[in-house]
Length: 326
Ligand SMILES: *[C@@H]1O[C@H](CO)[C@@H](O)[C@H](O)[C@H]1NC(C)=O
Ligand SMILES: *[C@@H]1O[C@H](CO)[C@@H](O)[C@H](O)[C@H]1NC(C)=O
Ligand SMILES: *[C@@H]1O[C@H](CO)[C@@H](O)[C@H](O)[C@H]1NC(C)=O
Ligand SMILES: *[C@@H]1O[C@H](CO)[C@@H](O)[C@H](O)[C@H]1NC(C)=O
Image (cartoon, rainbow, N blue to C red; front, side):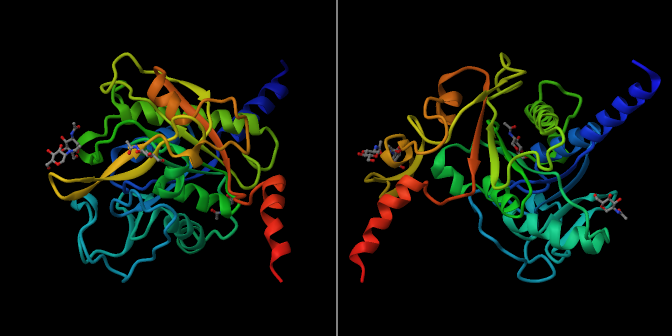
């Protein structure tokens, strides 16, 4: 290799590796998983802007809330910011780590519509990728797709033309980064997940090559990590495997009446037939639920599209009703 081509390839490498990433979650800006991921993505050389809800917004799906006032009405998650503080702001020592009194979906909009143009005075800046998570708990199947705030943030980025990937971990504890962040501990689940996010997004950028977008317009990915490290000492480096959202074992939320407590309780049900329908993609792939529940030390990777229209055959069949409407 000549010196010139060596320098060119170094430049290309840097160009491929340094990408502009918008990071959010639904567990709140003070959660350990997202803080670990912020630091690992930066360490890998990316330009990361983190904008996440000030409080826990799990299960809020794509709901789009704006702050009811310009100050917080209640303390933020873990009391890290307090009632009366501004409704949005950043870490004192890092203006790339923001909270916002909104939902994951509106955090995406706040970053793009406000922080970039007004705070950083850069209306032309474009994010190469939106990363949501890693969530504290898995997000699998169509039932969760619409319910999860992690996925809600992801599809809201995708609507805006930014490729999005939702990551979810199997560590369900809602932990405060001030207590649990340990970037050098290779057994800590948030640290392991953060390194896996870096591996995944770098593979995505490499496969992008010179295409303008890392994923085709209107496309996103959903990644679920198995228990790792202190949660499963046998698993420290799970393999990524292809999966799909619908099919056998796809979980649905359900409820059960409990006569003893006279309460209606949450349950999960893997027999909801609508979740088994395969109209798109590779029907022979295992579901995310299958990979996480019935294989060992593997991360599921599914691909979805926000073209929620049914395919031609399905829509033509449904549109037959129009013949009966005068
Ligand atoms: C604005 O963003 C663009 C694209 O990310 C970048 O090339 C440029 O340097 C930024 N300008 C400033 C003033 O930060
Ligand atoms: C879960 O997180 C909370 C809040 O940070 C902490 O008090 C608790 O000890 C954690 N539990 C586990 C099992 O990590
Ligand atoms: C029903 O409620 C009782 C009382 O709270 C509880 O002990 C029991 O585990 C519940 N049953 C089921 C199936 O969840
Ligand atoms: C799951 O849902 C099916 C109907 O889709 C129902 O027949 C069955 O009783 C439910 N199972 C549980 C455990 O709730």
